[in-house]
Image: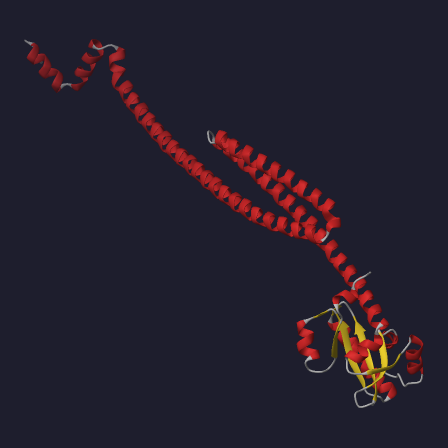
Amino acid sequence: MTTIDNIQDFIRVLGENPDWLEEVRIRVLTRELLGLPQVVAELAASHARLENTFQRFVETTDRRLEALENTVAELAASHARLENTFQRFVETTDRRLDALETTVAELAASHARLENTLQQFVETTDRRLDALETTVAELAASHVRLETTVAELAASHVRLETTVAELAASHVRLEGTVAKLASIVEAIHKDVGKIRGVYARDAIIADADGAAWELGFELQTALSRKDILGIIRSSDTSGIDRGDLQSFRTADLIMEVTDSEGADCYIAMEISYTVHWDDTRRAIRNAEFLTRFTGIPAHAVVAGVNLNDRIRRGVIESKEALWYEIPDKLAQAD
């Protein structure tokens, strides 16, 4: 039997008997105090979970902030590139508009009757430039306001791209208008050249005797269309294209002449204000037809106010054809 005389004996006995110690603890401590270790353990576990959750939140937030910063940087870089592209586009457009204005001015100076159309073109261009300047100014002001948020910057990009597209379309339309004007002027040049060619041809035909003399020949007769048709009918034309025969029959001028030694020969002359390759080829071909059909030598002659340097070097200097220069005043209408 265990004897307990003092508190030390009691503590010793409790140490020797764990069951007694537990029973005493139950009797002495409250239920709340007994459950406190478990509560502390649960609080520690909850704190650990909270720390893990907060750590994940911090990491997720850092990643999202980093992604947002990258997005903002990319948008800023894109905006800068777009501004550079737009600046280059404006500079290129200015240069092309300057060139177009110069071309329009030259066309206006050369052709007075197009002044009204060109004036309308200039006025339209001014209005478009004013509209462009207004749009650019509004866009610049919009950029300042839109720097506050990324969403507004993105919206500004959309509006800027739309404005650039409209400007490009307007520029294409402007180039089309100038191209049409240039085509009209080219057609007028051709018409004027044809009119001048008619005057030049009439002038030479009227002065056939003088033209033959200046070329070193003496005119016997200038063949009519009827005379030329008679030569064709009396000749072997097999193997000759019908179009070539028709062109020969309607030659500008065919003269029967004598040279400086009194020998008979022909002159096949094609007349234009400005002599081209087609004129030269027709003259040479007609001279060949005359020699083939009549057996008499024939000389190809091209007559005009202007002569292409390539024709001069390739045909005239090689003596394939002779050149007869028409004084400019002789080819002008009275």
